[in-house]
Length: 420
Image (tube, rainbow, N blue to C red; front, top):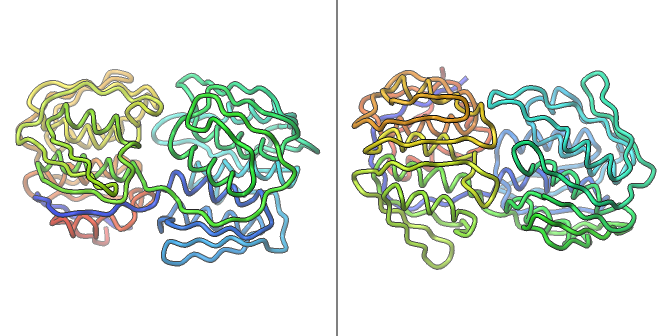
């Protein structure tokens, strides 16, 4: 097991964002909808991507992955079972359910299980697939589904905390081969859903309305293989913006679509940064030396992303005043609060709210990462803190950030990976 040793750092220069993990995973699952070859470019080399590769191989795909290019071909096996030993390590693997059901008429996918950031039930997935005519039951920790032919339907995907990205992806992949027209109401609007829809349309799917709360799909009989370029990772870009703010460093981020970051850019300006959007997808950040407090509420896209809540809380720990963070997507997603307080932050949590009273300086400490985005927040705090910070259990960060320490070192960060 590895740890990061981090020292206070001043950053400068330009960093290039990798391909989006959250977009690549459902696109990879969508290759189950065809027996033809698919080639996907700009795929990040991450633990979660490697896990999805293993799942696809179990399900009968032959995979080649090198230098960001993923080739998926059909193999002899036509298995419809995604085993728990793989699914338990990554929740996004549950989105194999929809394409397996649509293409192979049967699916047996392990339930993802618990999560440190709170309960994330799959009831919306099941409800949507049942609306398409699937027979679904839960047994032995597996979600089992079958349908001789899915039928188009009017499906409402609203849940307790708004729309569900993964459920939207699952239903979208299932209905592209359904008979007739499907209307997905209260669909997730995230760029990752637009990316998936673009991939499916290149395969021959008939989809309109992606990126809006109402997606219309006319089922087709068959999908073919294609070549596709994955979008850039907006969450990685937002993480570097947060690092720039916390360390009061001028940096530039290239390779990202700034329109995927409108809420993040808006909050960053309120905190006290000059944001310049240049041609070719380059974002330059010039923070003020004194950060201003703000109130942040996480919401479904295009609202502020829950996946950046922890990173920006690290910034607000150093703001000149009191900030309020309201978590409306995953109300229990505050595992990083205790660790930031160990570094001298002043944060009080009350249910889905956290009140942050900014301090002048954080102090280095030994801290433990609890999940992917909390890991990034603690690294950011370490870069802004006096002395040495040791971030333990960084295997979490390896799930979602490609070569994060190398990218930070190129910006001048004092960070190294060591055995824990």
